[in-house]
Length: 485
Image (cartoon, rainbow, N blue to C red):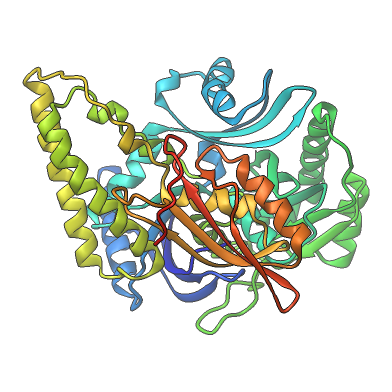
């Protein structure tokens, strides 16, 4: 289930700045506008200002007003590991991922921004794919965005973005799939298991190197897939290698396939749209290899698509910021943040598309943060109950619902979130199921959610041989109410 919105994706590739606006929802994104500028400067000290100017110019070329911005970062800046956690349960696994990654780091764990997804559970253990990035690098790029007046609601990595786009493009997603994403200066080999990334490795060879010396790239791909299979505990094997962003000539494809021991299939992620062409383009020199497709995948991930990686997800936890604030300030902040949460939901629905209003909201948040920090500096350390601020973000809720209620089982017609002071339901989901069995399956999936609790007896009826349903969900800490709205 994807959110319908205009999402602008931004990427810094060397001195090039790219911005593209997509309309998400209903599967493949639709390209609305795109702009590219190169930062021109004489000394390294001038590079920051040059990138800000280039981003300003690219944004000025756009006519569409996006509802949200997402930043796309290359895999060369990321640490990616497939690890095994010796127990089950998402909450326990989430708490253990950092400790399992720490031995692989050459810097303190506090400097790492982390996101992960659970791949599968085997014999009471959990296989996890984790992606991390040094906080320092992200702050450099976010500083450029802030200088240009942009706040990125999500930060993703290009390999995950391209893989998410590959999944929504109608490809076979059952079992194991191997995908080679080729870009201008680098590539990434990704293994997907049942719509989830199980493995990813950055390869320093771009399109030009792949064209000039394909045997070297083939050996890197072969070694990567062999290394993954040596540790893989699940079923299945690869039936082919999907290659995106690069068009092999028939003889080149056959030689590449012979080296890796798998058939090779060229895959174009997106076709021409109404206002621009994302693929296939001219790939002979590598200038168009997944150049804009990565941004399209980033927009899909921000709208609730599969394989979404977000390095800002951890920032939703406000406990570290709010700890030690006096009760009366917490009360006033509570009211303001409740309003902001409601505005944010409508913002992502497209109801708030005015950037000026978003700037007012950010300014108010900054004022609250300054006020809180000032009170903390005065030594006011009253213990305050902050459970109200622990609600998951909107994207977390949408991702949870999309995983528990897949599109091949049910059709979601409406999702609503009530205000925190409401005495009835928190989340209401309305839709249709293909049959009663399909509804029962997805309802049992929803009952396992850690984000909310669903009522035991949802409303459902049979119409035109389909099951129409209304499911109400509550916060885990709340009881059920009989009040209906």
